[in-house]
Length: 377
View 1 (cartoon, rainbow, N blue to C red):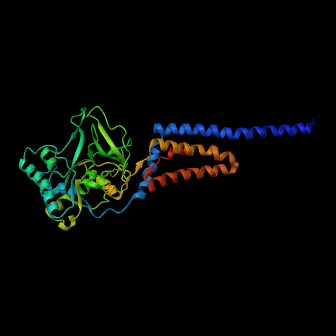
View 2 (cartoon, one colour; view 1 turned 90 degrees about the horizontal axis):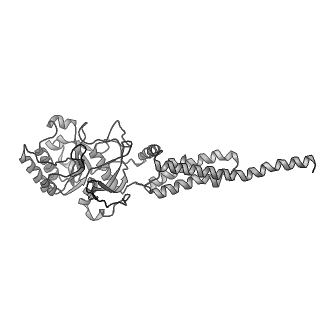
C-alpha cells in the first residue's frame, strides 16, 4: 500500500470509532442523569424549586368569590367595640339567632368551646339553645397537645354543644416543610380518620348523599395500633381562589348589633372566625406568603368553594411521577444521536419547555400536580 492509501485508511479509522462512541456516550450520560434525577426526586433536594413552580401556577386558578359565601370576621373593630377576647358567649348565641332568623343556609362557627364557662353558666345554656334551635351550625374539632411534650388529643366542643351542633369537622391544615399551607386532608382523626374537614362536614350537612365519594390521594395505611397518632386520608392541594380578603366579609360587631341588613345573610353560607392580627390561626399560603398570612376561616372558605366547584388538585402518584421523569430523561438518548450538533441546543431548550408545559397541562386539565424540576436537571 502506498503512502497516500495508508493516510486515507488512517483518516477513516477515527470516524468509524466516533460513530460507535457517540450513541454509547449519550446512553451512558442519559442513564447517569436519569439515575441522579430520580435520586434527587426521592430525596426532595429539588422540592423547593418544584413548590415555586407550583405556587406560580396557582394564579391561573384565581376565580371570582361566590356570592353565597360570607365571612363574619372577628376583626380589630369588633374587638375594639365588644371588648377583649374571649367574649361572653351570650354574644355568640345572639349572633346565631340573628343569622338563623335572617335565613342563613348554614353557619360555620370556627371557634372552639371546649370547656364550660364557669363564670357565666347562663351564657353556655343560651349558646347551646341557640345552636340546637338553629339546626344548621357546624363546629370545629381540634387536634392538640394536652400539655407541652404530651401526646395529641382530639378536642371537641363541650358535650352539650357537640350534641346540639348539626355537624363537627376538623380544622387542621397541613404545613409543608417551608411553612406554607398548600394541602389538606379531607378526613383525619386519632387512630382512624373519622372526622371530615370543616368544609366537608358543611357540604355533607347540606347534601349528605352527594359527598360519599371523595377526591384526593388515599392513605394506604389506615390501620394503626394506637389512638395517639393522627391518621389522614384523601389528601388534596388547595386551589386558592384568591389572596386574603378575596371573599366577602363583614365585621362581627356589625352582624351582631344589626348594622348589617338581615337580607345580606339570606341563603348564605356564613363562616364566623378570627381575622384580627394575633387572634386565630393565620397561615402563610402560596397566594399570600409570609407578609400577609391568610386567616384560617378564609382558608376554609377557599376549600369549601373548591370542593363545590369540583376542583381538587391531587399530587401525582410517586410511581407515575418517577416513570414520567425517567421517560423524559431518557429521551435525549433516543433523539440526540440522530441530530446534527447545531440542533442539539435548540432541542434541549424545546424539551425543557415541553416538560414545563406538560406539568402545567396535567395541573390545569387533569388536576394532577407533576413536579417537573427533577426532569429538567
